[in-house]
Image (cartoon, rainbow, N blue to C red; front, side, top):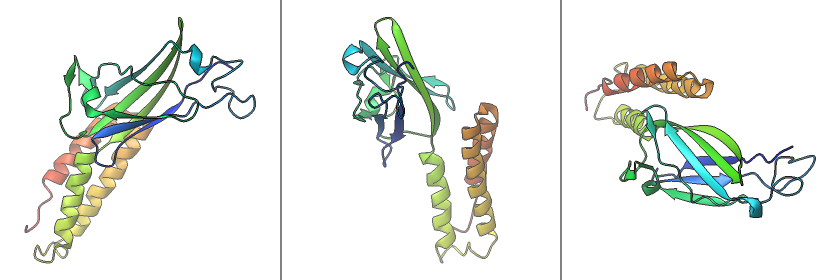
Length: 193
């Protein structure tokens, strides 16, 4: 089997950077045939790496990130927001915003390239709206708990779970529609506060 780079990527807790971890590992004929090392290419053979990131929700393609080092020891790279540029201009100032990101890691050995792609769903803005609505619901001065607000909040939560399902299933049209409807619903979720 040929080299098969693998990785995980996720936002940091406060959404101010991405955490990339290469998980390709070391070649083992039975447990990791796509890892680095004989008979596959090794990390010392790698001539270039790049990370291509596209935000499908907002139709943004970022400039390639070429500062990732090939690693067979599950190396972690912290990618600051300043690395997420479009035509060399920073896209984010302080934190990631909602997005459905397709991330492709390419490891090149001479003229041969090996790729691995994952999708990640990042919803800090939507989760904050939902959390704010919950805070209003439990605030006794708002009197929201008895007004049917709880049922409306639970519907919003259910819509958020459906949105995550749309992202997993890969239907971008359905995902975009569900995302828009959910955020409109949350924007209109009112109480006495």
